[in-house]
Amino acid sequence: MTILAGDVGGTTTRLALFTDASGAPASIERYMSEEHRGLGDMVARFLATHPAQVTAAAFGVAGPVVDGRTETVNLAWPVDETSLRERLGLDRVWLLNDLEANAWGIPLLGPADLAVLQEGAEDPSGTIAVISAGTGLGQAIVVRDRRGDRILPTEGGHADFAPASALQEELLGFLRAELGHVSWERVCSGMGLVNIERFLRTRAGEPEPAWAADGDAAAIGRHALEDTDLVSTQALEMMVEIYGAQAGNLALAAMATGGVYVGGGIAPKILPQLRDGRFLHAFAAKGRFSALLSRIPVRVILDELTALRGAAHRAASP
Image 1 (tube, rainbow, N blue to C red):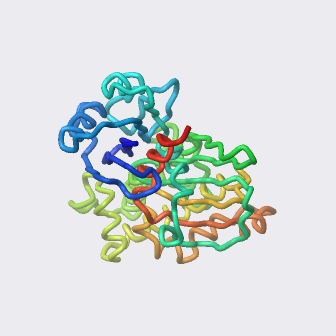
Image 2 (cartoon, rainbow, N blue to C red):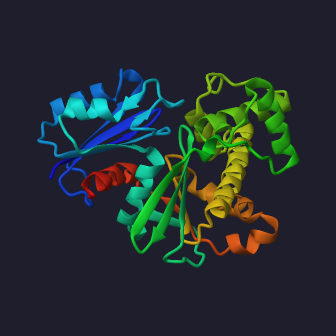
């Protein structure tokens, strides 16, 4: 069996071929999403470079999938499962939410693929929660029972942001004046880091430096990690607190005694900041349920191919 798998993000898209769904990709390419007219064009380009007799395919896409189609806020083009089937000439094609694909990949991860933030006490039959900040903020829930895992994709990242401090209340007011509705994604993602930095810079009465003027989240993150710009450092610290708070909210909503997995491209890059206490303090700061949350395992996914591997795992499943 040769499987075509994709991890389709608002910024980048990875496509790969797998001959072993639980192993490493046989070939892989990375594309800038906005430079292409759609996923079908990228697939055609990929298969022209890596010819193969594909037997099944699955694609994780950053957005809600309804009736095999998504028109997401973080992608410039829609993705349709039916058109992909026709283009590939296959019956076995699945379109998944990207966090659903991440969740499919979790069973494939080994100890070296994970960083432990909180050891906790895992319930082997307990529900798992997955939260992932990247271009946007994704969330999923894995319900485990005797019949196997059932993965529930969500759009919880677009729920209302709930500030947990006076400074976060100011941030909410600042963004509400611009956006109207302020979701968790607006303050916990690449765009979230940009919004927080802009808020703190405005609050301090400082002009935006040239490197931050175009909303470059990577540049802000780099200055924060290198501690070369105070506002950038403060922005990252604030985002980490918000990340922890929403991870705790998801853990409560899912009763995630099986653990919380923190995925996405941002978490591995800011691992020291996730370990400095801010994330876990915000995670557990839930009043009467703080003790419960302190017992929930929290792990960071280090393998950047987890969603890709998860899509392949789904395509290979009955």
